[in-house]
Image (cartoon, rainbow, N blue to C red; front, side, top):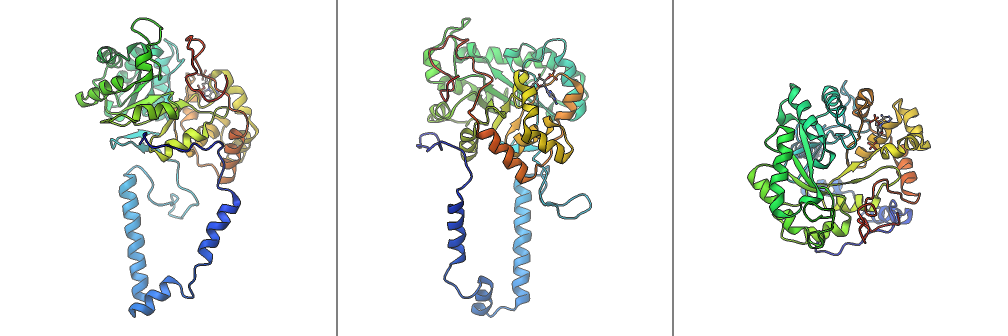
Length: 390
Ligand code: A2P
């Protein structure tokens, strides 16, 4: 996948109007005086009723195939509860990863959820219906997260648990031990997803960059593949990787391809090129800081396009934003330690296409601005993301 040269679009824009016209024109001017159906009837001496029966069978087959692909949790047809067709399906509750596992589309993020509050947040989330908790060794709160999960009456296999490998443990010989620490803290024998937290490796017990493992994360990845084989982890992925860094990893002969890439995605930093590229390469993005993080959440909720959606649909601005993320095709990880907000953030809604497009356009037409970039704090002589000045 990665060895191919990919043209990264400079800007994100819908197909230009003239291209659309050209496509439509190509269809409209096909040199034919009869429709396909008319030709079929006349060439094969078929009765119209036979053609109708064939068409109905074909449609039924297509629906059955779609249902089989989407699985039992996804709507196969767009029907409302009273059976009437509706304009749009529900937003996806899950995405299917290459392993066949289904990852819930909305998670509770626990970055910056402090000790003494994160357990209650996890409990509130599970009570509200969340079945996906996104954490990390570095957040230093895994023991409390694990206790809250253990105290609930929800079975382990019904909860999706993600953790992340910290920079200081990228050396293959260090990985299993720190993974075991995470598993112990979470009181579980396996993770659903384990991510390389950053594409930056530190030398053991330091914050000094390990240049070899940063330039080439393949040895780290091979050890993670071994953890999959051992059953300690069901899926492995990456976080904070830009396209070039993904390609740098996937150019190797991987046994397991990265299941997801978790990156900052929000109104201020919507990363349309990365999103488009990731979709084209079948690697879903997970959106962290989806509301703009504590630093910018207030401003994000005030964005006029967000407010307009909230007003039109009778939902909150946070729900409008979280829905936008899912409708963009990403997994979304809003963080909150406030029970009412946790409950609020779980309810996503299909946005009307025109309002979705307006928000997408507003998000992608101002200069991008990251909330999270530790390159300077870590004293790096390079920018981790290497895309725009920060
Ligand atoms: P708190 O945790 O105190 O509830 P992000 O997910 O982008 O990192 O944003 C997290 C920030 O947004 C936190 O400060 C969190 O506050 C706040 N937040 C989360 N959900 C909502 C909401 N529904 N309305 C307003 N603020 C929210």
